[in-house]
Length: 110
Image (cartoon, rainbow, N blue to C red):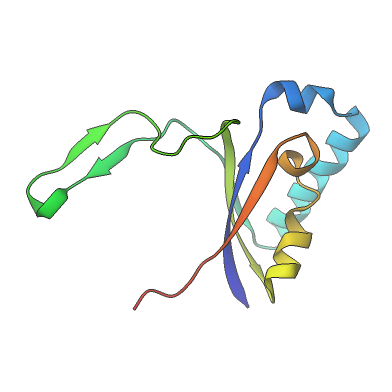
């Protein structure tokens, strides 16, 4: 099985626009993904870390990425194919609540 990193983007306004039954179904879907082994979490405040040339660590309390919607959460999932991974996240809260979910294949490092 391949591993995939997912990043969910969404805001409260989009979440609130979705029918409560659809939101409940999306949260139940997340619960099933967790029970099947997905490692999921809500995004906290990021810290940038740099150590250019191994000359010293500097940090900055802000995101490096920018997007129209805030990062809402992350997951690491296992699926046989990219298509299966897409199917797995297509019913999550960010996907159904006017947000977006990115699926990144996690490749082995050399």
